[in-house]
Length: 387
Image (tube, rainbow, N blue to C red):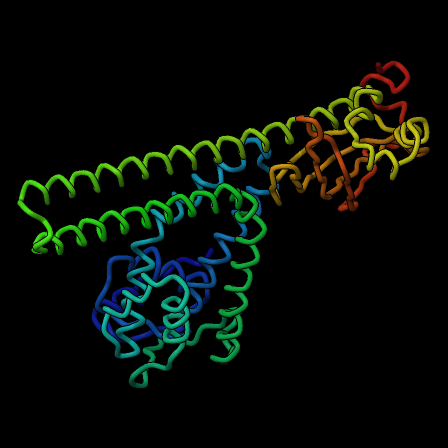
């Protein structure tokens, strides 16, 4: 790794508004790690893009790496810790970058308040930061440097900048979106909205009572206070009843989800243990009509050594039907050895007489690989010896 030019750092302190051409990595180290508390300087468009692209790539590669190597049981906690640490480390240098970039464009730092508006504010700042400098910048050269990207145009850097944000969007959609339980999230939002509506109703009722205090139909102040107390008590009772109702609905939803998920896990565990009768009994009549008789279905697993459910994510929910997306790993005997496969698919559960059954399922092969040159080299329990 090329170290940052010490003479260049001295020049930067002497001339805080000067910019220097340097490699992408050295530019990132200078602007993100060394100058993380400098708010009044300036940052050229190219140097801003270099720094932002490196930061985006570091976040994306680390997120994908954790997603691939961390077991699904601990994945949610590990990714949450990583995102928290990443934001904690990068928040101050990132704000410093934005301030110096706004200085270079000639805009006030209060433009950062647009970040409080997640979509339109972020889009406004995204395109604002791509503006040209307010005045032309003279480079103080310490000797011509050759590095990767030194001959790229500003348009090329802008394209790389946009592509890095597309990469960030794809990574977040693949890695972090499955961690969010959309059904429960919507339910929480509905609960919050209901509480806000209840509060609004309470205050409008109180306001109505206050406005009627002057009404001549109310004979005395004590009568007004009595009516007000009754209205407030009524609102409290209604709010409490609504809260209890929403909590009971939420508990019923979660209970159904847990029961359906438990059935899926038992199904694949039964196949892994070659308890095919138990697994076949978990199919609904509709699914049995699709797959045929038991013996033909069982024959499809004659070469299966093991199956393991890697991940099970909720997709859609209703009181009688729940669908999941699953990730499944299997090992099969083949003539040349043992083949490991990874499948992804969807499974729909149907509630029948209070119990959950598999009503339909599909899947696609993501990848496969040969683990050993021959089946006999596998030292685990043999297929014929398993129960």
